[in-house]
Length: 263
Image (cartoon, rainbow, N blue to C red; front, side):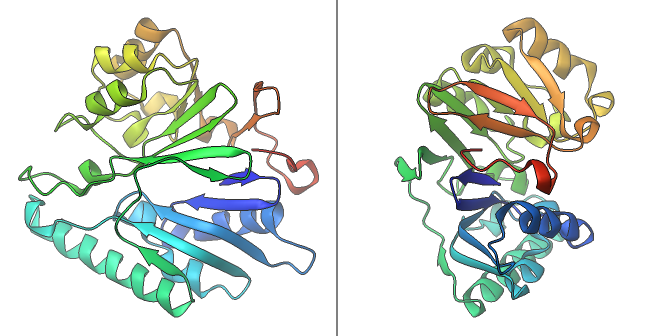
């Protein structure tokens, strides 16, 4: 969840089994006095169930409204696995249909330039559908998102991999970041040059650090001296960037401790 004042945007929505956790958090943090949640936009990084599987539940919730949905085109013919082609196509189609039925504007051509979101500047990266590599998986199609304020920069990468060089190209484009969302839960190795180019101070893993291969953690620690935090072990994480550009981390995600400025 991206928050600037009382403006909110959501990156992915989990699968059906975990959507209630997402819904409860939105209600606790983003709901108005009437219990309604308004999201300026939802971005689906890619068409895997863990990221888009609960789209019908999200758009079908009468308490949640969404203005705009960003979702990339799917290059089905390039996916190497027939089962994945069928699954991704079905999930993506259902998400688009349910979004339109809920009154959201669906954008499949992802803007590549910076745009303002409250006090943040945002930019989508890896916006073009991969229609030239063959026998890839949908992780290679992941949208990334740069969230910046003052001189601080946060990079979210979905499940982007470096099998086709996406992360290496992204690192060269983005340069140094303060916070790096470790792609694919840290389950795959990153190139050392990629880690060095990004040189984050903080790495966030949507996984238990015990489940991240030692090579991944070792390369991150040795090549950029970052501190690695696990969402699993911390029960979720909030990153706050204040007016002066100071960056803070906390795992106080309960309603009575909600952040009301810029998180």
